[in-house]
Image 1 (tube, protein in one colour):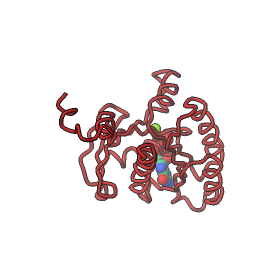
Image 2 (spheres, protein in one colour; image 1 turned 135 degrees about the vertical axis):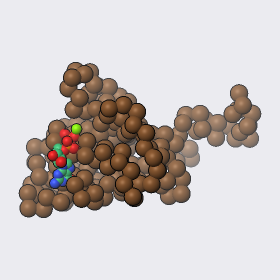
Image 3 (tube, protein in one colour; image 1 turned 90 degrees about the vertical axis):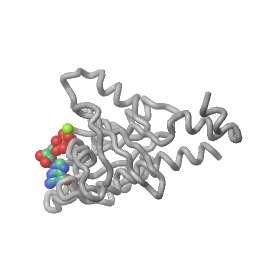
Length: 196
Ligand code: GDP
Ligand code: MG
């Protein structure tokens, strides 16, 4: 009630503030061993370049507020994909709850790259008609001599699947900050185009 009277001048701003437009659930998916939890740990760990406190909401859920392009955004990062003890339902759950997805493969493991394509298709099927922000993430870019998937292949795959692409290294913390900023920008792009 308070909020309504407070922003009565613009009905649009009521809608966007009430839908919690600055808080995004970002879900990590991808083959076991590609580095999802390592990326999540950097997000949770509060190293220098991501300068705010992280709240651990559960064993595999982390919350952090970032400043991106002068505007704050809260990411709830969900790393439950490999949680087998909870059963298969957890994967269906993951496919439903994300506002955005990071589909991770390892550049040293071609099978994980192929799996990423499969997951992209599954996601599209699970969330038909929704334009969900996705970043295809080629992790372990530090392992230069074990590379099985080229940068060009990763990029081409992202074009086919209509999503963004980045290579990261959780081990040397390369492009990890850029990854989380990137997903915030992707969500915002869609939000802003909806408002117009
Ligand atoms: P998850 O199963 O997808 O959660 O993968 P983990 O985060 O548990 O990582 C699996 C293994 O890969 C661990 O031994 C990590 O230390 C290692 N790892 C993860 N990211 C990187 C990376 O960027 N570079 C290297 N060299 N190793 C990594
Ligand atoms: Mg893990």
